[in-house]
View 1 (cartoon, rainbow, N blue to C red):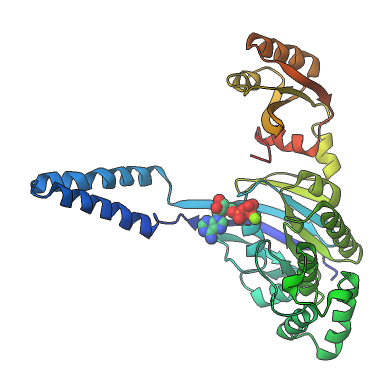
View 2: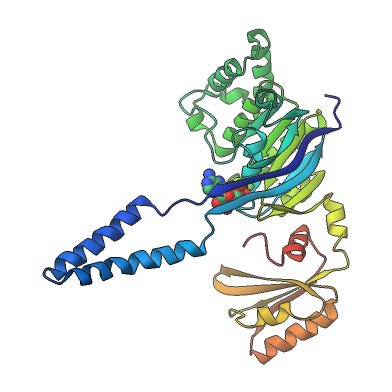
Length: 373
Ligand SMILES: Nc1ncnc2c1ncn2[C@@H]1O[C@H](COP(=O)(O)OP(=O)(O)O)[C@@H](O)[C@H]1O
Ligand SMILES: [Mg+2]
């Protein structure tokens, strides 16, 4: 391809109009108001209009508080280098899928633009699509009533792959994704992992330089997820550029050459996994496990000096426990303060641990909250 950057994102923004209150719910409210009116029977017109004003007035007040547009992607700018695996990491609702959909020209940006393989997503969408293979998460990109091979035949024709090349390429893809044995089986009989591999094979039919993978391992068992990560690494080693989204910290860490952490539509950090972790290397995480919800303590912990982030995770294996994780610049001092607080509340400490920071901690340090929230 020869370009240093496979993708250049420039001030890209997308807003959505918030959905109006559901029509059925509105009808239901009106019915109930109507029924009330009927039951009242002979009561005056004044009573009627006040009964109507009640729910409507409340509805209006509610709407006034909610802005009617939601910024899903908030003016992001960064470059993805040719030949790298770039991880877009963030919690649910951060704007990952919206970004991918704009890059593959399924959604128009509200403002800003991006280039894929040198082509502008707004002005040259057809050339962008020809440079990209995309696998969106949670969307059916395959025909379940066709076999694996029939799916690839169909999409090869759709993507105008030369029939002479198509045959060989499909055989290669089936082999590479270990689907040759299952090529004649209906996709509805495939496992989730097999379907995901076939979706990537489909995206590779026209041999595009750039691949967009939206949460490629979501819903896969650990073994299939590991296999899929190997597949992604191989694609990179063969020269493809891969942009993948994930909300799994460990996956982004293991797979990506560089990571952009995205939250509420904004990029809050961008670097190599190592650099992101070095950034907080002076930090430690102090963990205590207790057997009651730690009501007031979390706020107090947040306001302690040297504390950079606090999270609390509830778990139940047999009995319920709560694990408080505190990210701190001084583990000794924070540990003392934490134990004092717990003692004052009469909490029983089940477990205690001081650990090196993880990439999860980078996110907590930057946002003050956990990715799992
Ligand atoms: N078609 C849409 N209409 C309205 N809001 C949307 C639409 N698609 C996404 N959103 C909202 O935009 C935000 C970002 O969503 P998304 O890009 O899917 O996040 P992610 O993929 O990181 O989970 C969310 O708040 C989501 O509810
Ligand atoms: Mg998504």
